[in-house]
Image (cartoon, rainbow, N blue to C red; front, side, top):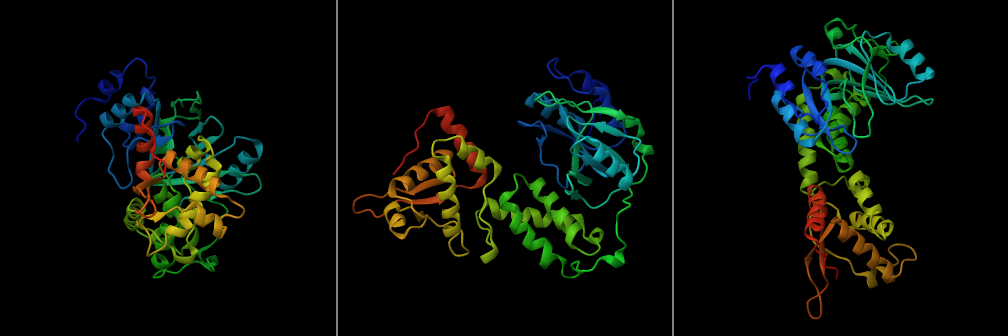
Length: 375
């Protein structure tokens, strides 16, 4: 899809209820940068998949923002690096100045700072001595753009310079970077896929909320664990992430005895909103531990509360507590009934719902006022 209409026409024709930062968006887009529409509860969630994609037409960005009633856009960081300071205080400012130097373009966020630099560098997180700083870089990373206003009223404003300084930014430099000769213990070339990329994709995919988040997590691990991470093709990271994400959606991931039993933020939040959700969380972890093995993934399983009580699967739990926990999981839509048991029919069987079905389940139940069948 090509950009046919003038940028000014696209931006000036937005609905009055939107307060899009027209000047900032036009400046960035005319400068060749790639933008993405953001929204969701926090206002910072991508409304489209963008990993590995070319620059979106401005029509697509603004149309998505209009439909979502969002005043928040993102700047993809191709050819750029942003030092994302979570908390704007004296300690963080002093640290950033000493380690990364001065930027000609700094955006004040609701809590912290975005310092822009030219060039790309491996993504990383600095979490030490009360510091909370993320280094974001490359076309599969983004930051919220200046002029954006989040649903909670938080604003992103220019503190130093504006987007006209993009072409004049100083190159990113890290004064604390060790010489390559100091890379003792790093995974060597030729071993990086088998020892880092592949196992980390399997480990992280169950606890990421999107493919884009998984790609960023993999990039961070590669940068931290591998020797010469800049020589690993971005396409290889994206390909591996897509494979692991698809396996997650198919409920066919297995990491052996080192596999982790996890819940996503969405699952945890929904369980905490229903009666006996804390019991459901414990039972869900137990079910995933027992029924997500290599030979059992995707297969129906029983939840026999009397047998589980007798075997003391969860220490001290009685039959009624297992039943209450099961009801909570069913209400949230994390498991589904695949076979209704009964007299001369055997035990009822259940199956894990695929991740993308959880939200749809909740929305359909709320919309239709349907009851969940409990057996």
